[in-house]
Length: 525
Image 1 (spheres, rainbow, N blue to C red):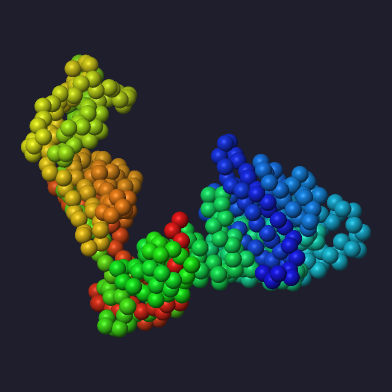
Image 2 (image 1 turned 30 degrees about the horizontal axis):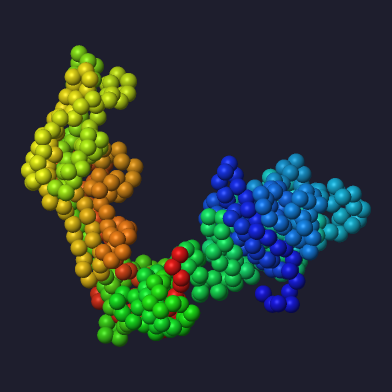
């Protein structure tokens, strides 16, 4: 934005809470005349709340809203030089197009001839000049959206607020309306403030994008700045596809990632500062293995119409495989007490024996008792076992107060770990027992398998957790039979997505090339 542009709107330290939860955390933002500004972020980030505060539909808990040099924080909506277009257009179904557009002017009691001039101008602007007498219900979604915009613009507001107005449209119509909105904004020459969670929409339409997360602004800039120079990992991930790596900034214009040093154009970081490094998919070229700065294996190729989306893996993730023993559910029945009870065998590390508790054993064996008539749970009153801190199989008996009992086995073994010294990772998991119906009834099996196996991964240097990104198995969860199955847990390898017009074959070794200006270094969040 040029410095000569007039500052039209100022948000000063805006704070807003709902039910004790802060949704805006001290927002400071300046908006200038004739800008198309987009508030971009996921649901719950605070973008619509900020828009509603500007519109006068909500009051901030703290802070001020300045409009054209005047404090409008406590001004009611009808006294603000603003109009709003919502996702639900709120058009009057009993009125035709002309009367919907004219509604605000009639409320102001403007002369009939002036109303006619203004409405017809708006209908020409939105390419609906021959539809004035058409009923709203006869209009398509895109046409209704344009009528809602015309109804707001006919009042000649200083600013138009648009709260996800394209959300109800199909993909093709959304793209058409994106172009239409930008064209209308340029023609009427007023400030548009647009709320969306759609990144492509923001990049296509905006002069300025405000990226928000959890009630805070992450970055403000032009679409080009936001895309090419994201401020942090969140922005890079949210705006377009990204390849993001952990790196170390050795000094100005020198960064290390994948244990290799690269020239870059970034500066101003501390010596040996830990950073995030982003390279956009379109900035990487696939070349011969010996000609690349990195080398990897092509894992997948998808044709996207004008280019191929190619994934190249330069490093395998750390992995570990465990055994899952599946049995049928055969609970113990105590007819006289009206109880049923079941428990699974389970594995235990030798190092966990000293800290063993009844609650731990009940949890890991999935021991439970219940009333078969009501399905209500019944408390387990005692857990009986004798165990040594050495490998072996130890029986454990669970009892209810009514005397129902079931016995399972604790199988004590050495900890099951896999260490990748080269990349400084350790992954841990245990073998486990499950009943077939538990697997069949799981609604998030990958997550449940990680929980059942107590699968965890760590960075050896820092001790911080590393995400387990892949869970691999060969069984059919819906038709699983009793037996023994292997489950593999893996951390993320180094994978690069490349958008290219050149097709590579899956399984081949390729080189990856990029220029120093294609490497974007970001502060760690």
